[in-house]
Length: 335
Image (cartoon, rainbow, N blue to C red; front, side, top):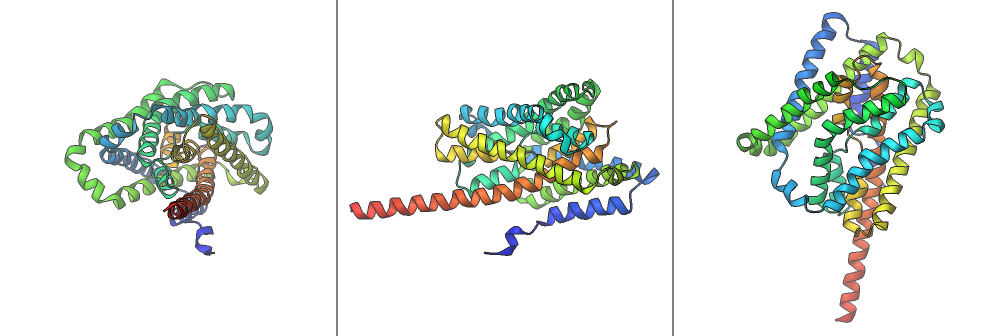
């Protein structure tokens, strides 16, 4: 068994380096203002490129499977928020109030796009439906997440969400996305041929937000307020949320009568949360809150979900190969 599969990927290493840099050399003053502007521009470019890349044909092809899409959306925007609220008496003592606010925010986020589709493909699931489900979740999250955050903040005693914050999400994320969709006919093929560019912008914008967020948090004494037991508690909270989501999506899909390929799509699209959408949204929605503590749960959940889903995808793929071999042997015997 290769040890490489247990090692963190380059982006995870880059996140660790960024947090370390922000802890040792936090940006402040004019440098912090410059980084804020640069971060806003990078986020706008990111969602513009996502809009230019998203295939309308793939979305239309997958939209007919409405039962699957409703199941994924219910898991993403209903199951997770309900878990975040119901498990609060049990899990909140493990972390600080600011960290649990980040956990509640995590529960409102849309699903990932790239990794959901990649794991569905690896596990031999319904890829067109995964493309549609993950894309719809990402797009609806621009509207649904701010509304859910408002409800969650009220339940957490933090006050509701202002319309200015919702307007900020629309202006910073939706407008560039729509502009990318409009420009797709001219630049779509070029974006598809240069997917590496989108990956660099995707990861680069996240690293910029993480650096500015943790710089501000470090200057406010983040690490002095967060001992190792609290970080361990956060890992437990994230692991519990992911485990419940995986179990509910897996056995719920079977109870609803979905076939194996659809079950795979529901598991990998309905159990994930998007770091790429979450970090930019947190920057807008939590302008007056300790942003470093709010994005930390998302960063940890991101890595846990990638490692766990990689193992699950390999198991699904191995099971599919075993079924194929059994069918081939049965066919040969009959012949």
